[in-house]
Image (cartoon, rainbow, N blue to C red; front, top):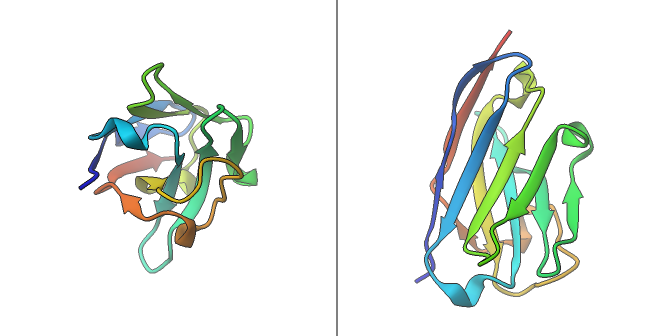
Length: 125
């Protein structure tokens, strides 16, 4: 059973930075689409950023130029560097893996079937 564990969330002031990490439990998932999603109370999960097996990335318009998704060389840890954070970035952040795709990674919740437990990010003005 694949398992994802996120960390790195916290509380920061507007303009600050955080780096989220997501550690995967099994090496066989390392060449799959991986992504970060976020969710606020009462809303569904929205895609933030994705990365495919070749390192190609996609970003939601709201985070382009501020957030960067990367992986370590072993592809067992996913990162999300978040700069210039704003109050509207406040959310629970989840990492996810698509066991059925390794490229053309979508920022759509239904495309991913392994999820972490989430890490809270709170940005104050």
